[in-house]
Image 1 (cartoon, rainbow, N blue to C red):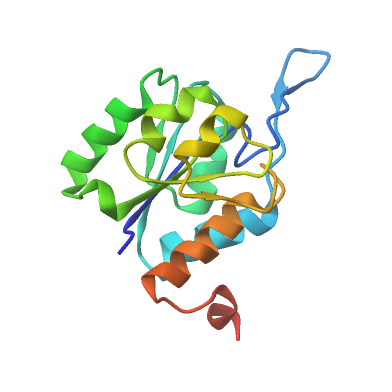
Image 2 (image 1 turned 60 degrees about the vertical axis):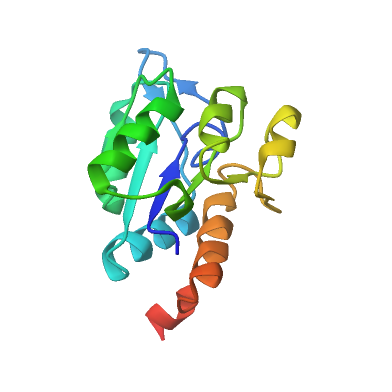
Length: 163
């Protein structure tokens, strides 16, 4: 059973684009449907999730808090090491973790857990992915991942939480 979801940000929770305003403020776009699925996972199923990203961003911190993501790690260069630390802290096995990433800096975590990859992820990751999703990053890939994990876990479908 999957008990922890780990998300990369750029290229998975977002479409991988970073926008800068004229004043230099960074902006990102997040998919609302992904957010609803994450919120159900965290709040209604009372499961754990984490963000592990190589970039620092107040926007990511705010989005994570909004969705109930308890573990937020930014500026991480070795994502596999961070997952190892998280497994120890939460007393989990690698088989109880699913992650989503889209580029070479996610390779370490792909080798450690059930790895999902958006349709537009880096070609080199494909052979390490448990599942290549039909949706692109920032365009519903995270929702698709969570729906697949719910199916694997034998949990209710997302719509059952809103009927």
